[in-house]
Image 1 (cartoon, rainbow, N blue to C red):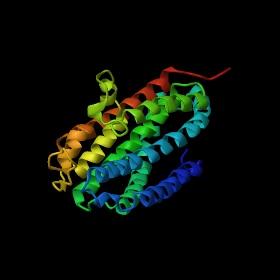
Image 2 (image 1 turned 90 degrees about the horizontal axis):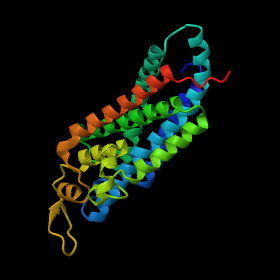
Image 3 (image 1 turned 90 degrees about the vertical axis):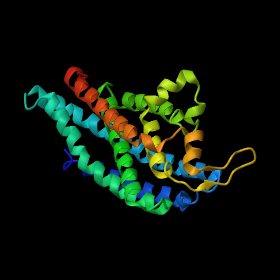
Image 4 (image 1 turned 180 degrees about the vertical axis):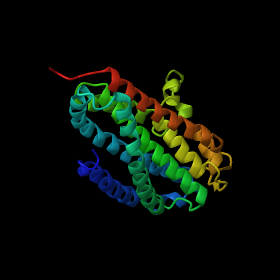
Length: 266
């Protein structure tokens, strides 16, 4: 399939380069200025934008491709050429190397242009969370395509859910300020865990003192993001596990729907 549709992967890699340079240009040099609360918020904005824009692009690009493939799958599966589960596994596994290359290219561009701290562990954390973000967005696109009868409905469902993900991810409204009756959604929001992992890995261990504003006691960058955003460097493992879990959940729903739902019109 991937050799027969080179425009699909070509478009993904093209957008990775273009969006990487655009985001890097917009937030150029923001990563190494972290001395005031406003500068830290700017860094958070760079992380938020870098994580979400390419993920949403991946989601939007895989849905039309799966809509085309579904009609072919119905025909070949009806002829007994293969089962639903092997097909779903192949669909998921083949995405991994493409997503990894995409994440490496995008991370190198954005990380260097935004000028985050160049240490081995920080860059690997950044790369890992970018890869996992692309992975769950792609799996989410596969899932919404498989549970809806038409491409347009899948896109509408994705956009509806994404609007809540975006609103309650902890950036527009920091986690400590989210109303208690919406807290549950924050904790089951994959975008929130992406932002958590990226911010905690880049800022959660920084001991530089923040220039305090009137009425605010002196504090380090790590203390500021823990108090203001609720992010702790000690939770990086939990953030990683959560994103793996969301990716697996979305993929399992995709495989289940592929096996048990049939939207073929006769």
